[in-house]
Image (cartoon, rainbow, N blue to C red):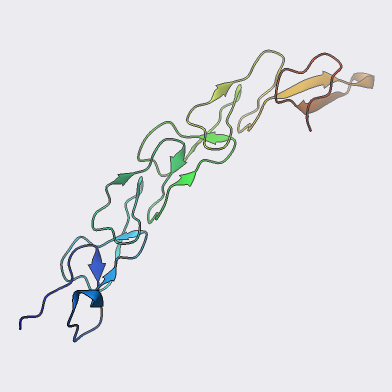
Length: 151
């Protein structure tokens, strides 16, 4: 009986294998594109994900997520960042004048009477306090004059 090598998406570094079940799934975050892979060494390309048992990276990272090299799953963009393109290895910082919730695909423009510095996760409203002091409070909606927003 002729020995058979493990097919793509699998590997084995053992000798004397006699059945297909001796082949193991390629590690998550790696690809095993060839027959006879003895150990997964090809990292998943940035912008793609490689779950367990991947032969070639083909699952594209979607907008609102990022996928650095060797990703096994998509990572959601954190609050204050966004991603509006496929196959990206990082998220973009939310620019001043806009805010970005977690898993944002696009920036949301700040409304009048709100302030959004670069990297904002939500709008904030400036409210003058006594003695010329300014207090910044978080608002989920437009703050009415004299009404404090959510902290």
